[in-house]
Length: 160
Image (cartoon, rainbow, N blue to C red):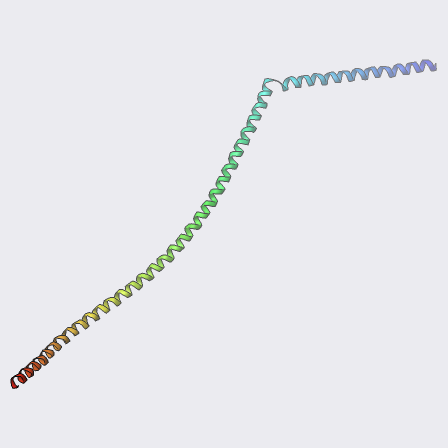
């Protein structure tokens, strides 16, 4: 009886082993079929086209990002140049204001010097007129003195 029981237990155990083996085989076949279906779909025209489109999109994205980076660098350089130009304009305006102030000061000095020159010329004219009047008086005095000297010389010559 023990042998019979052992034999029936062994049959029971063998049956589930076969069943487990068959179940495992079915699962492996299902996985294999799923893998084949996935491989077929992955290599299908739509999938490869989609992959190529994605790669092209990534390539274009990198290109556009590169262009954007270059544009940002150029923009940054231009902003620096603009800031430099603005600073130069401010400096030139300040310099121009200083020059204009100096020109105004020099124009004031020129005006003062012109006035002094006009005053000096007027004084020279006044002195010249006074000198001419004095010379006329002196020349008539001189001529009177000269006449007196000539008369005296002539009288002395006659008396001699």
